[in-house]
Each structure stands twice: as structure tokens, then as C-alpha cells.
Image 1 (tube, rainbow, N blue to C red):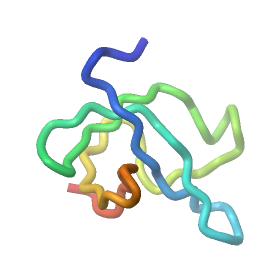
Image 2 (image 1 turned 180 degrees about the vertical axis):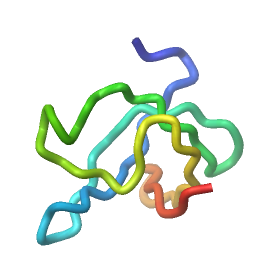
Image 3 (image 1 turned 60 degrees about the vertical axis):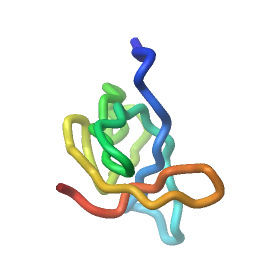
Length: 73
């Protein structure tokens, strides 16, 4: 279940031939810093290997109002 502090960030899908980003739930803990809270098993349910996983703390870049994870902290 998503909490009131959960936001949507985008994580790169690694097993695609082009750049594709998956929206996931994450809790914002500082400006541009998020902890991934999404419990979906993307690899088994959707055959997607994501660059970062649940529990990871990531730094994001903002583009057009959306946040894109690019660095594991």
C-alpha cells in the first residue's frame, strides 16, 4: 500500500534494446533523494530487470516535473 509520502520516480529497465523507464513508488527523503518502496517483483511478474531495486536509496534528476533515478547512494 502506498503511503501519503510515496511519490513516483522512474527507473531504467536494463533488458531493453532502447532506453525505457519504469515508474515505481518511492519515498522522498531529501531533495532529489528517494528510497524505493515499490514491492512489485518486476523481474518475475513483468520480465523487466531494473537498474535499482526495492530498498535502494537513489539520487534522481528532475526532467519535466518527473524524477529519474541515475545513482545508487
